Length: 254
Image (cartoon, rainbow, N blue to C red; front, side, top):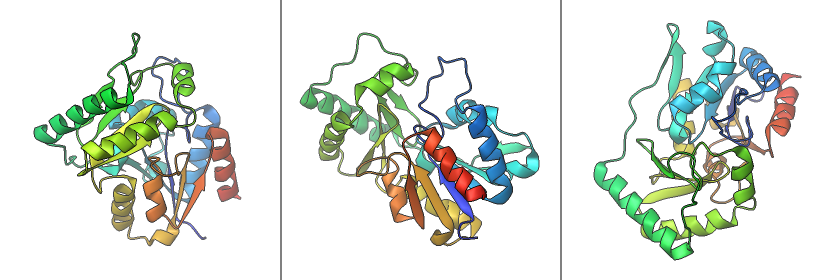
């Protein structure tokens, strides 16, 4: 077997996008079934800029409750600044190395400067916080985290708006890392704290070489929030949505 660990992004990979306003499960039944099958044959990791609470609603609520299968599942919220493992019937997440108040203040100020420089105006209708404090990460979402999928997907299809934003943020935040994430998001963390960091920590935890890791994501282009995985994984597969992800899983299960 070439790979032992298969890691996935969430938004645009396992699901279309976050939208707590929807009543339907955020991973569909087919995706849930394929992930459950994958956990029998491989170790499976899910890494995203999302918080652990979002992991619970988007992913865990719709997966198997089989304890033996869940032992093969590893969750890495907020781009891998925490590693959550299943044991004794519960999920255990070590404490996150949170940003300091002064660091957060610097990041918030940089966003204000960037908004002015690129001409971004906060929309009249927003759905949750535009800039969210996730402890170890600050996340900007153009319409708020809970915006309907249709609004999110129409805003920055070619990523050009956020590419410009990231370039400006890097000027004001030279000691931090900024990456495009999701459909409308930008994630800011300490420099070196990104998906590469989280995946390296997981490989150490499992005592696996990088060659055993396959990463699947939709943001593997420059400055995409999946791009750091290119430095760590033995192989990366770019997908354009959940249906392509399902095809990758099917191939792995043959």
